[in-house]
Amino acid sequence: FGSRQRAALEGLLPQASPTVPVGSVHAPRLVTMLRACLASISPLAARRVVSFGLARPPVTTFSGGASPLLPWAFRNIQTHVAPVVRTALCQARVGALPGLVGRCFGARWLLAGSAGLAAYLFQKRQSMATCEVKCESAAVCAAVPTPAVGSSSKSREGLIRRLFGLLNALLSWSFMISIWVGALALPFVLLAAVVAQQWQWAGALVGLFLWPHLLPIPALPFTRDFLFAGMKHWQGPPGTCRFLDLSGEEGCSEPEPEPAPGSAKSGKARKMYCYHPHGILSVGALMLLEQVPDLRCCGGPFLYHCAPLFRFGMDGLMAVKFGSVRPADLHGYMKKGETRLMLVPGGFHEATISCPGHERVFLKNRKGFVKYALRYGYDLVPVYTIGESDLAANVQGGWGWRFFLNNLGIPAVLPWGCAWLPLFPRRGVELVTAVGPAVKMPKIERPTNEDVSEHHARYVKEVQKLYERMKVGTASEGRKLEVW
Image (tube, rainbow, N blue to C red; front, side, top):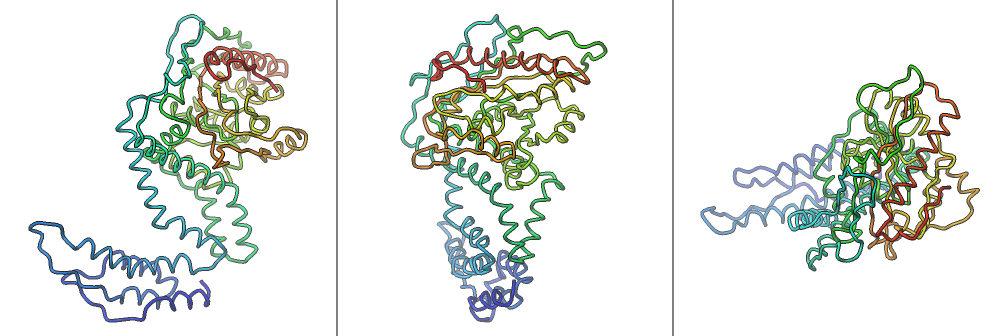
């Protein structure tokens, strides 16, 4: 901090006064820790923190009844500690970042988080039906036993459960939108700090950018369950989000073609899950990651290398193994022999063409993932979510310049989801995510363009077959799959 900020910080603190011991209890540990934190900012502020005259608690016995010690502690924290914390966070005046941090960690956000946690625990305890319906038949190819999408497939909820579930859902989707916005905004914050010559903030942000690449991010499984439960409950009561696992019906897929001479596969089967459609928020992909937790989700290179907040959210709070679709990164994963990868072949182009009332995939000229699968011997597993395109409206047209932005790695989408929260997905949209049978791929060290085109056509055919099987009884039953 500079001289102006130090003077403002010291001027807002009360003058030093003799320390009043509280019986045999000295200053609270929180005050001691706060003094150590402020010592590097302002020695005078640290001395005043430790010199606060704390009110003596009333003499009390613990033989029975409620003790007034707790109200005394809260009163002293509110009177002495809270003003110092607010001063340290909000009086720095280095851009808008300190004020933003102070507001985000205010009391109302802590209360909201506690309420959301209580809502999740209440939902988990009171739940009588799950949101997933798994299909594990190995019979011949027949109609998928998809539950009806009417109200009979949804469990009824009382008013209290709906309110708690809505609170859990609001917090979960607020978190998801925040890490997306943070991923896009943080590089501009770093640029602003450099332009303003605020080198302390610039150095801290650089360290934040480097952290995910230098140190492992620990996963928190409890927050994973909390966030996934909230995102599913946003769509509606249990039964609105369903999951169909058809990967065991290997007989429904085409037989594996004969491999090239000397290129037979060996070892454990490797699978590359290919998700369709991208949509605006890829909610169905999150449902897949919940059901198959050992998948490595390969996203855009910018999100992996230049968006630390997104990495902390995915790797840490959601316990998702996140990766990159950059060619060098994909080569690294496949050379290491990772058995389960997931990517979205359509990418931002598929998000751009997303439109409610239409089922579209961007696959006609997307053949790179097939070439990788052939080179390293990965089977392709098609995954499709019906309802993904209905989660948000998206402006149509202007494909030329929008696809040009997509080629630069910029998502050219103009979405509007929920009517009163445009960045949130629409509520009440039923989602059916299905994992189809694996499309067997031979291992070809150097596949030719003819090899890639042949197996790409096989994969597109399997995606169309999966869609035709799973659309029965859904809102997309009368829609045709459009392949762009």
